[in-house]
Amino acid sequence: MLIVTTDSIPGKEIVEVKGLVKGSTVRSKHIGKDISASLKTIVGGELNGYNEMLIEARQIAFGRMADEAQSIGANAIVGVRLMSSAVMAGAAEMVAYGTAVVVK
Image 1 (spheres, rainbow, N blue to C red):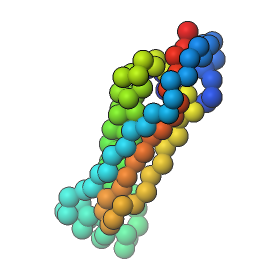
Image 2 (cartoon, rainbow, N blue to C red):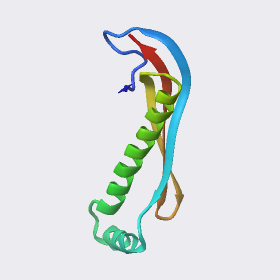
Image 3 (cartoon, helix red, strand yellow):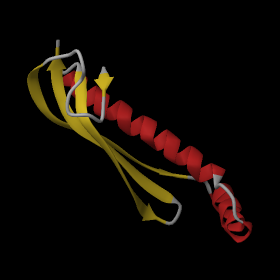
């Protein structure tokens, strides 16, 4: 599955547009990581637990989007975008979306 943020794929021709596809997940970290992150905000630095959470969330959202595209017969997704939002303290939603297409 080719996944790109551009509206076209160099060297490929879009022969069919299948439609909008998306994948999403809501992730959180356990209370121990949350307490650790709270302490880290006092001294500064990277919040590794939350960074790991967002990396995992992106991978899951991309995977679900690709699965949806494959299920409708697409072999590529163009115009991919990511969106995230805080759902509650310590939890974030990650959404990946784009246009499923068939390319040759």
